[in-house]
Amino acid sequence: MGRRTKPDEFVRIVHKIHRILPETNVGADVIVGFPGETEKDFSATVEVVRNAVVNYLHIFPFSPRPLTPAAEMQPQIPARVVRERVQMLRRIDAELRHRYISAFLSRVLELLVEKVDNGEVKGITSNYIKVRAWYEKGWSPQPNQIVSVKLTKTKGKICLGEIVSPAPA
Image (cartoon, rainbow, N blue to C red; front, side, top):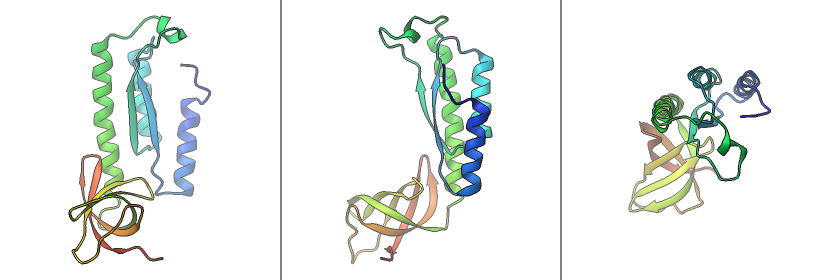
């Protein structure tokens, strides 16, 4: 695809990030089915994703855009093959997210409140874990407020939790 960063360099950079900031949530964008992608190429992508210790994936099936060089490149990958590869990467993404989020269960983290609805808060932690949490009646968190949340359970791409208090100032 003509990327300037080679796979081994990407893996090295992500490992360095994790050495310096071990709890960093690193994601990767992956385009599947770029013209000419072989089974060997796709296997190498899977290997890089696993070796780099990324925590989530943004997966995009290649779609040709008119008047771009890639739209004319051959061979175009059959849609069935692209779908299979996307599904495989989605399974890997679920494993990666679950592993990362699980490492934070029972911990209390700061949560930026994005939405409040009938005793439920939706928000995101400073390390980009999406959370749905519940709070005790008697005080009302507000959007854009930072609160402390105890993470209790994973559920797909998010974590469930309970608000334990407003975050310290």
